[in-house]
Amino acid sequence: MSTFESFSSQFKGDVVTPKDPTYQQALDRWAANTKRNAAIVAFVKDAEDVALAIKYARQAGLRIAIRGGGHSTSGSSSSDGGLVIDLSRYLKEVKVDPETKLIRVQGGAIWKTVDAEAIKHGLAAVGGLVNHTGVGGLSTGGGYGWLSGLHGLVIDNTVQLTVVTADGSILTANETENADLFWGVRGGGSNFGVVTEFVFKLHPQRPEIFAGPLVFTPDKVEKVAAFLDDWWPRAKPEEGIAAAIMLGPDGSPLLMTFIFYNGSQEDGRQAYKGLFDISPVMEQCGVLPYPSVNELPNPMSQWGRNYYFKGVLLSEKPSDDINPKNFDEVTKTLRSSPDHISAVEFEYLPKTKINSVPADSAPFRRDLQGNTLLVAQWQDDTPEKSRKAKEIVYALAKVLRTEGEGYGNYTSESDAAPTGGSVTTDRVKAMFREHYPRLQDIKKKYDPDMVFNQWYTIIPA
Figure 1: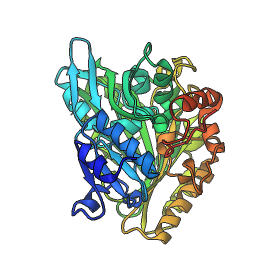
Figure 2: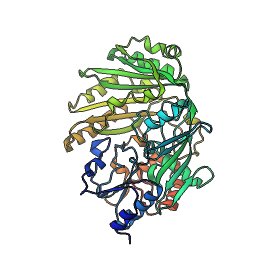
Figure 3: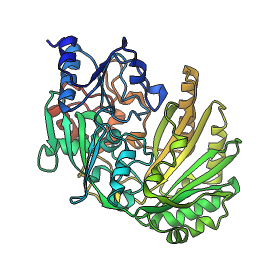
Figure 4: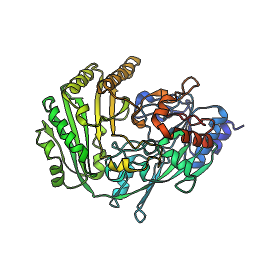
């Protein structure tokens, strides 16, 4: 039986416990309301450290959480009284091979590092829309980005993984080696182990793109929706629009669209001419270095605030979601609490490439229109403010009349993980649908005791 002393003496990284002066800092998360008081935070230095931490946690009866970027709104990267395997301190390097157009990314890296290193070689990886998001969680949960129209999801561009499984094995997983594990992790999240390294495809990328926000007043909602209805079915792979119903700094309702065009300013302005012609009240579009586009949302997603998310699916026609009636009902809900900054964000990324990938290539749905993110954020967390945030988000979902399970990376629902010794399986089955039985078989092989149980937990066959 491994004691804490023997574990600590063999561990190469840093072991932090409540008695250490850096303990509170070690618990920090992007969403402050997901901070949990772990018994141990293990800052791992390599895959062997991860294996050691898993072995000790299992022997000591400690629940395990995996922390990459710490961006989860469901608290899946935190553990109350458990052991956190934290990759963010030492396993955050990336290495580009420009000859093979591959990038090796350690499990604790963030997308900002990936963007910065790849563009030095005129290359880019499909990555997150917010660049301080961790690579690990986004990549194992699917992975949408501005380049998805051209190159698919992050999971479609993953060529190899290094995974430490529940028994402490350090496995290479790709199309030919441990292929079942490779299949399961690409969409099955953290259900099968700790990914200490990803290998992604890189693609040639121009250094500058055309992007930026256009803001419209409520009287323009119908015209913007009509433009989106016309543009969306024929959107080119190099295009993309995010639209948000939100309140301005003065509390006035507005519709913001953020346009992305992977090309010149001249071509971009032509592609979105119909939108510019609607006369936005504000426009800040221009030529940007490619990595900068993933920095632009950062002021609205600052570290250390409190967040509640819900992911729902886009309707087939943008005007079914964005119309004067919905706009009025949404803004009424947004105004219902002065303590919260809330918004509805619609992601219109060209889906032809994403949905052309065979349905059985990975356990991720290939028939989706795309994602809507419902978000509430607030300062100074209290139980009342937390409850109100959930109320706001569910009221917004009701306005949009959404059905089915949304994008798993956008969940704040703690019932995706075991509660009180049981597991909520309906949402998990709704997430994985026809892939669930196969995932259960893989779970039985690599994690029969459900050691990894923090995100849409799969029950072994």
